[in-house]
Amino acid sequence: MTDLVPMSAAPAPMQMGGGASLTGVPLSRRAKAAIVVRLLLNEGADIPLEDLPEELQAHLTKAMGNMRVVDRDTLNAVVGEFAHEVERIGLRFPGGIAGALSALDGKISAQTAARLRKEAGVREGGDPWKRIKDAGPDLLLPVLEHESIEIAAVMLSKLDVSKAAQLLGKLPGPRARQITYAVSMTGAVTPDAVERIGISLASQLATRPVSAFEDGPVERVGAILNSSTTLTRDDMLAGLDESDEGFAKAVRKAIFTFANIPARIAPRDVPRILRDVDPDMLRTALAGAPAMGMEESVEFILGNMSGRLADQLREELSELAPPKTAETDEAMAAVIARIREMEASGDLMLLSKEPEEDADT
Image (cartoon, rainbow, N blue to C red; front, side):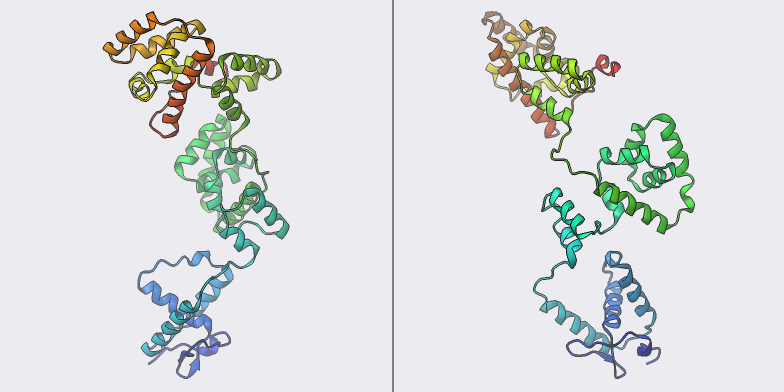
């Protein structure tokens, strides 16, 4: 047997279990690890060695580089020891606070994780670019807006194509063109530089204050006013107009009411929406809408259902006494709630905002 492991080049030997050795020389743990990894790779196993600390990756590579041929008896002994050690492990905990935080990611609150990380003085582990790719557009857009053109170009190159295109479309034209051109100049950027940029950007994202709310203030106010009566909603919007016209305009865009149905609902979706709406609620909503200036919504709904059902409803509406405002609001809310449920479940796609509203922005 030639070209066997030169033990003189290996680290201090450390025997396990049966004490596998080669030509009478005990194998070190690193040499045994190299044998096991080589065997697994030969068998086609996908081993995420890149997740190991760089120092361990280097030790493993050097150990494999120092080895040539291992006889079958030694291989069997190493594999037997390895299997024995694995079987003895009952439970393994991550090392240190950084490992514990990684293991509990998503299981403890973001506020607690941020506080513990700050107290321990550790940064988030793992691939920084994975965390950046998983971040939402609202977190990444400020980076593209305020970082240097070169940094922005590297980040854009590392993102998924769809997300990169989405972010690029949100940037002002001149800035977007500068970053796009800079992407063409990133061919000479080294992997080390990309990693340092990733660590820096991930640290910036990690130090952002954790919000107590999942949605922004516009979405929260819009959701509240969506469920409010027409009188309350109009009064609140009038007050917002006086205090912050820009915020009031954004809230109006986030609101979806009975009056928005003709502009935001595709005609083909009307029958599907009405299928699960209580008939009494629908009649009340249609009967009370004209008094609130929503005749267009009534005609839109009646005009996009079957002719027989529309004629029947028109006849019933003509015989109904005008409902009270509170009853109309409740009935309209039931119709809107059904639309929102279908949108949330992916069964319905709302059309874009009204052109006249967009033109005002």
